[in-house]
Image 1 (cartoon, helix red, strand yellow):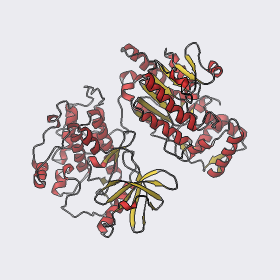
Image 2: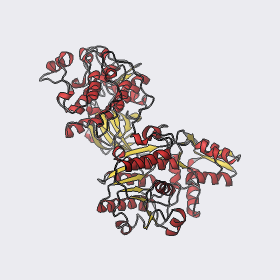
Image 3: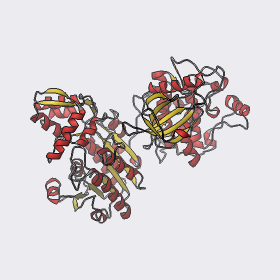
Length: 634
């Protein structure tokens, strides 16, 4: 089926073959209408005449479509053209666990446990919500996306409640190396068979080998159903006993001795709180981990991440201050922090917080007069410069440990001749990385935006995406923080909407006002930045998407504003294309338009993440948008 590369199928251009299996070929492609990258799975023509393969192919698409979880590949579309059956999935740009194991042989325990917990989450949701059993969990079907998140792939052998069985009774499905004893015997399977397969994968990740082998198929199957299981510590003496106990429980030959559901396994894996340093403290007694006499545990509502002790203060501001103080008390090096965009909205709040914690940050500013009005000039080091001018950066970053990069043209600002998305967001980031590497800077923390994705050249989203990718590929230590829309005193996005409410006779609901936002308080974003600064070990080379504690449709955002401003306005539907034309006109004639073409891109998708994103990752609950607006007058 190589001949399909370069052709179109449905509304998708097939670009390159990226995978091949027993049922067909997977191509990297592009959705012609939206320009986004996708993966297109096409049923082999030789199998299209076999009703059982056609049924299995259709069933795989239906099963994936019924599942919605961040660790399960998403499906976008399905169809048939020229007798070719296909379905379209998200394109996962990353390696499989199989390729990682082939390269590295053994995966560090803290990563292996984290990956296994994510897989267990996916299996738990699949079984509890749709009664889906995957039946083919193996490293080849487990991919890492470019943010290091696991994606469970290939549901071609999966079975779900309400779907007719397709495989012949008493025949083995799935890879034999990862098959459970009951799978080998041909018994009726339940979710515990997937838990066994996950145990095999985890065993392989931490030891570098599979639990059972054989020189022939009969020898291998006999080992699975009756052979002696060597503990993984036999191959890796440094393996933590608590992690080994979880693996052996998942691999219990009697499925009644395994975990009752994958959620319990995920909970126990996370309760180990493994880090690169492999902390020895164990949060769960061993008797809870073993098959015999184990206590049934309820999985948590959300995976909990253990934070360092010094990140457990009563308020976000006290929390960040405690982190800063603890770092100094424990002999941590005092950082020279360099802030780009120091007079911008996030930048000025960050500088104020750093100064309150006793830091003397170095601030890159374009306009020295503006900086002297906004920043505490006696407590910071001002450097006049511009990320678009490399010569101004060479000396500015000398002696710097960490750069907080916040100098971006945001979606609510119009572009200008010397301050465009391509110049500031892309070229400016490239200059900063080049200067940082030359000066020996250790780390860059980039303040990006929620929803960053590839887009058309020259656009706002494309600029933010390229800035992230350059940093990830730079070889420097990095952390990327992606906040949702900001609120707070004079927050540009909210202020623009408030100005519109004051001046317009009616409130225009772009696209019907259904787009969802997750406004986050600027001071809470600053707290997250300070925590990342103070805890480099746990936050290095990670992307954090953060938002407030509630979702608001665009219509509901206006409701909150109208109530806070004590103003009554009628809300009217405004077609997105028409508003886009208006935004282009305003951007052309007004120095500070209330709405820009770039801001319109925020209405093309829900600007949201998990509701507990801040609490789960950083240990505090952010300020509520509606509460803030009720307590303050605009």
